[in-house]
Structure formats: C-alpha cells, structure tokens
Image 1 (tube, rainbow, N blue to C red):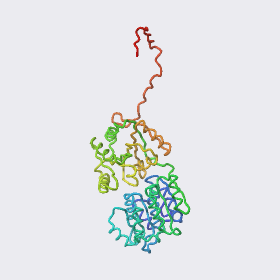
Image 2 (tube, rainbow, N blue to C red):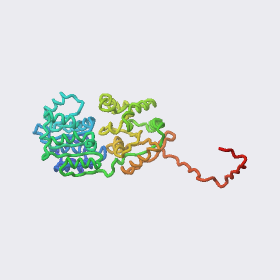
Image 3 (tube, rainbow, N blue to C red):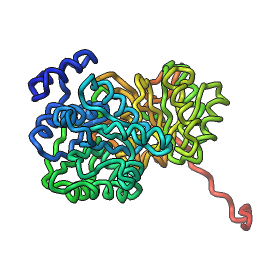
Image 4 (cartoon, helix red, strand yellow):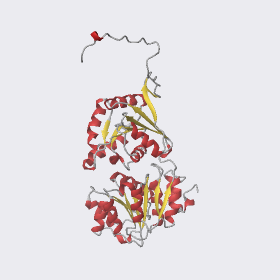
Length: 404
C-alpha cells in the first residue's frame, strides 16, 4: 500500500493530496486510514511530524455526508494554535461541493463564530470548552455527530481538560459515535480514559522509535551561571536560523528572553494565552525569520508546528521523558535532520539518563572547543595514593607541637 487510493480514499481526495505534494502515505496513515474507514475506534500513537493530522482528516472527509448540512464530526485540540493548524489543513482539502469546516476556539469573536455555524459545517475544529458552549446554546447539533477526534489526546485527557472533553462526548449519541485518539505518547492514565470513551479500542503504534532517527541528541555539562554563555557560543559556532529554547518555569520566560538579548541574540517568548497578541507576534516573528530564538515551556509549545527549526535547546532539563520527547519533536520534522542540545548541570544529568532509558536514545556529551561542538577531552584520573618516591614526613618533637 504505497498510494492514498490504495487505502480506500476517493480519487478526488487522492488528487487533492497530490496537488499539495503528498504522494505516498506515511506509516501511521497506512495503519489509521483503513481502520477508521472500517468503522473501528483507534488509539494511534506515532512520533511528532509523522502525518497524524491527515491520518484522521482524510477518513473524516471520506466518510461524512456532503448532502447533510449539519455537524457530523468534531476535532478537539488542547491549544488554539493546533486547532488553527488542523483547520488550515482541512481547508486545503476542501473544494466546491465537499466537506466544509469551521474553526471554533475560545477568545475569538462570538458573532463571527455564530455566523460560521449558521452555514452548517459538517466538520467543527476547536477547543472543547468553546465547542461545549455552542452545543449548550444549541448552535451545534450534537446528536448528529458521529465522529470525534482527540488530537494530542494525552493533553486533552489530563486533569485540566478531561471534564470539558467528557462533557462534549456525552452530548453525542453513544450508539452512533466513534471516538478516535491521536498522540505522540500514551501513558496508562490516558489509555484508561480512552477505554472509557471508546466501545472497543484498536491500538496502533507506528515508528518503533519514540523520536525520529534523524535527530542528534547532545548534552553540554555546565554550571547554571554559564548556560547563556554556552548558548552564545553555540550560536556563533552552528549559526542556526531557528532555535527553540525550552525552560521549565513559565514565570522565567521574560527573564530568559532578556538574558538572550543581553548576549545580542534576537529572541522572544511564547507567553500564555492571556497575552494572546504578544504570543502571536512572537510566533509570526519566528516564522518570518525576524528572530532566531523562541523561548517556550512544555505547555506553551505543545501542538505548535514551525517549519525548519534547526536546533532545540533544553536550557532547563525536563524531569519527565515525555516532555523531552515533545520538545525534541519541534525539530527534525518530515524526515529532515535536527539537533537537540541539553545544557545540564551535574545535578540535572540524572534526568538526561532517564530520558535515554525511556525514549531509547543516546545523548552524547559534547563541549565547545575552538568554536566547534566537539567530544570532551578525557581528563587524567588523580592518583589515589602518594607516589612511592614521595619523601616521608618527619615527626615533630613533642615540644614543637602546638595545642589546638
């Protein structure tokens, strides 16, 4: 099966994909598309950048009824930016007389969303909270929904989003709905929640590695006070065009950005949704190449898709391997090579070892030497005892010893 048509998709959909430059389905698309078309409910796990969005959008477009002007499918996402990206991909699949989609997210103009919903789109994409709000206002007819997709399912089924997601699912008819879950990672808690939402789960896992093999993983051991100096040296040596810098504490975004600027590096930060305009301005500047460094936290960057990120720097080492996995997934997308470099203190080194073990990767130690990223020089071990030739110390006479 090396064509989209062979997966059971219509000639029209296959032709639209060819125009977009998609000629051969990825591994997760080959597994998920036929399964969803057969009516199965899947939990699909695949590495970042492996084509999960098309893996669920294509069977949705294939199965929904164009003649019925009512909402038949929902795609829920944990972030507004991911919803926008999914909607753009859906729009690229739309032609005259095919499925129509609508973007429904919090913070957007309510009147405009109401007007979009009056057009009776078959596919609604957005945040669970805002979609639930429109369902309760009866502007979205939930009883006609037959397909629900949870993109970044591990995030949608965490403590923050679970209640809203469950509420949306419960508004639909259990006998008619199919729930599909897609993510780069599934833990035990997510799988338990998935089983509660699905009638019978088909678990699909493609790409044996949790991270693309095109990624290079390095670590520089350094003290905390020297981390920004190391970043300046890395920039001078590698000359990357786009760099994502990850920290653990969102409160430190401003401080981190200012320190990078102090070292004459063009930087901005991915701030919370409360600062939506500032956040959008930073993303636009990063995409357009007006800044080189974009500072983010794990929560702030999940679901974002930036093309051609050359380097990911872990300024703070994530304590959980799943966060390292999602950070690393910002680079090396679509088969391209990428580099993940962690600036670790001796104390943080243990978390890198945990990432190696659970993600099945090797993080190679490096150091900056003569303007290059090189293997660290081997240091000679200090002798554990005095050399044999060392003269014996003479004992002082009792009278020469001073009291303590």
